[in-house]
Image (cartoon, rainbow, N blue to C red):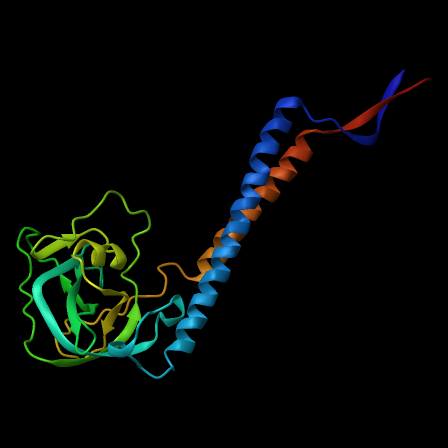
Length: 248
């Protein structure tokens, strides 16, 4: 009597199947999530390119701003309020740690409304305990820049105190919460100053995103690749050839 191999049969075990059913959908969902993120970033980049071609908004007559106004050019007429300034920490430029400097600018002729102004970047220096000297110009000024939100920090841990007088360092900055904390009618976006404007420091154009759509696509390929490899391993390890006995 002898044996020979004939057809294939698929007979997965209980535990390998359980592991597969847990991991495979998870890997696929991560790939789909990265694809969605890539599409979001592409739309954001397209919106910035389109809105930068618009005519500047006059913030003194704007009653409200929407998400559609992000990245638009804008101008403001008024004066700085020197009592408080905020430094958003962990803003790296050319591999050097620093801060983004935010100051309050009261809009003339708008019943006390104000806009938060991103004046640019300054280095941390050798001693973090020694904060930079950041004087503000006096008098009525006209500022030009573009509208944007303060740089994102991903997960914001803990609460920050926006009410400290003078110069304070913050890990992140939320415009809406700042306005509530200081009891100011504050526009919901910051004005990022153009180069050459009064009070501007080192211009540091914030990227629309720290991670471009191409990176998200690369991560999606990796997750889908892992899902495909898992499927092949699962099928391969649980597939056998059927043996037949031959009579002599």
